[in-house]
Amino acid sequence: MIEYSVFILLGIFSGLIAGLLGIGGGLIVVPVLLFLFPLIGLGDSPHLVHLAIGTSLATILFSSMASIYTHHKNKGVLWDVFIRIAPGIVIGSILGSTIAHLLPGEILKKVFGVLEILIALQMAFGRNPAPTRTLPSGVPLSFFGVSVGAVGTIMGMGGGALTTPFFMWCNVAARNAMATSAAIGLPNALAGAIGYIVTGWGQPDLPSWSIGYIYLPALLGIVIPSLFFAPIGATLTHRLPAKLLKRFFAIMLVLLGLNMLIH
Image 1 (cartoon, helix red, strand yellow):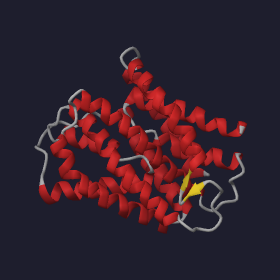
Image 2 (cartoon, helix red, strand yellow):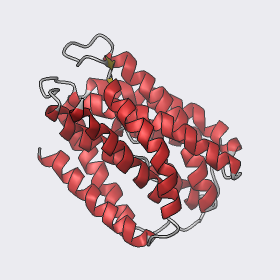
Image 3 (tube, rainbow, N blue to C red):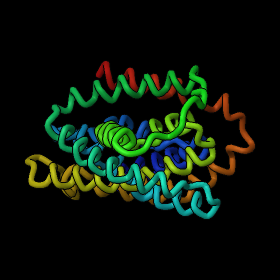
């Protein structure tokens, strides 16, 4: 059981980062799981990439519940926006898990690596978009939800990294943009995790204690400590230099993304 303690350490770290920077842990969890799985004897499974992504999405399901409670208590979630975009998010999540199932693991790794580097560069050098328009409604907002759900599910990170800047571009206050994005993570993670369970169900060569493409020991090891350490990270964010932290985290994401592309 000692080797499984690494999942607990990953949960502590991802929880702190999520609390400090308000970013879903999937950007860290997926590449680190791909590194850890062979170390605990899962290297022979041909489904490691799908397992890492599916497990990451399942962790977001639990962390988003805690986040929604906090943001709702602080009256930050725009529930009318949530209700309008959630159906598209769910459809996109189902679509994303289906696409991920059909793609070979190596291609998924490359896609993840490229997108992770782009997100890191935006985090390090990008500026918050100028609020130049209003939030769309109807078909445009639904289409955006489908796109966010699909990309977030394929990457196992949820869609917060995409919805927050979009909402701010549409004149939504930063506080409401981040809170509403956190709420959107719930239907994204729920539909995506179910999709990874269904598409992975009955696949050969999955490790024991897997439900579809979700590896339960990693899920439990990550979720439990992250729920305790995310609030600690949120407290530290008011005491540490946020800009410097984002630059440091961006460098880490670039290195993880490059590793996904090279190996």
